[in-house]
Image (cartoon, rainbow, N blue to C red; front, side):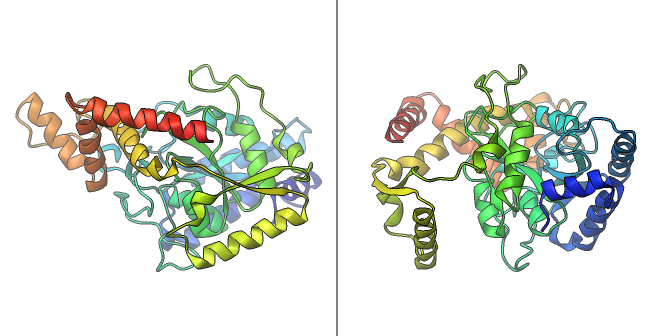
Amino acid sequence: MTGIKKIAEQLAQGSLTSQALVSEALQKIKATSELNAYLDVFSDSALKRAKIVDEKRSRGEALGPLAGIPIAVKDNIVMDEGKSTAGSKILAKFESPYNATVVERLLAAGAIPVGKTNLDEFAMGSTTESSFFGPSKNPLNPEHIPGGSSGGSAVAVASDTVRVSLGSDTGGSIRQPAACCGVLGLKPTYGRVSRYGLIAFASSLDQIGPFARCSEDAALLLQCISGFDEMDNTSSTRPVPDFSAELQKGIKGKIIGLPKEYFGTGLDAKIAISIEKAVKQLEGQGAKIQEISLPHMEYGVAAYYVIACAEASANLARFDGVRYTHRSQSANDLISLYSKSRAEGFGTEVKRRIILGTYVLSSGFYDAYYLQAQKVRRVITDDF
């Protein structure tokens, strides 16, 4: 696959137009519809944006680094176009009145959104099978899962409908589907990318990040969406590095830690061989490999589930059937409106996590579960 930098050169030289690029993307989306990667496709607006980019280029106007490049966006990142469903029945008809900050930054860079991608409902899952709109399929083998929760975004890149896409990662939701689909996925450091306009799952863990086919494209996309945002008080004020330039420096002299706890029971033999090959490649490029210990990682999953579900319970309380969500037609008072709308609107996995989160936050259990999980989180952070 041709990278964005090469495509940008072709666009600048006039051997390729943005309209042709977008038309190709739309044709590929239609041709791979059985993969169910997309929940909404912006055919008309994408072509209009492409025409505007081509006209600006013909006039010699300054253009952004992603000018004319088609991109897909996970459907828990709101846009003022189409619907923003988070893969859930309860938001199946929701139309956002505004764009997420990352979308605004993509548009400012000249990118052209061609559609919203499928996901596990409210990003809760690792297979994309909990989506209200049906599962996505892995383009490498449609009989296999694409991973999740950002399965649609990974499939969109792996099936070559777009060069890059956006996903979100709370507990592996970019990294895991990237691995399943054979593409590159990155969860940025928390706070590097604004969460404003991301439909919240677990606010202290959620982060938006890129999917790509090569590190150069991922670096460019991350560059465009990173930076402080006054609409998100958890976003970092630290300067954004030039990620593309950093790629050219190589890894000679870098120390790479291999946690010994990751190489115990449960590691598949084929994965172990792949890691060994990667380690040898890194050593060949001058990196130093050092065994390290993260002694409390065995408690990581348990702490994650308590914290994530507790925050999900609080965040999803806003979806009550009163304002912009699914509303039950059989309710006869306020309490039944709440309960029936939520029972009808949420899927099984979301209900399970809400119930667990509400339990660990309840009187008498808060200290034993949620507070304890926060302490464990601190210990694991100290290990790193």
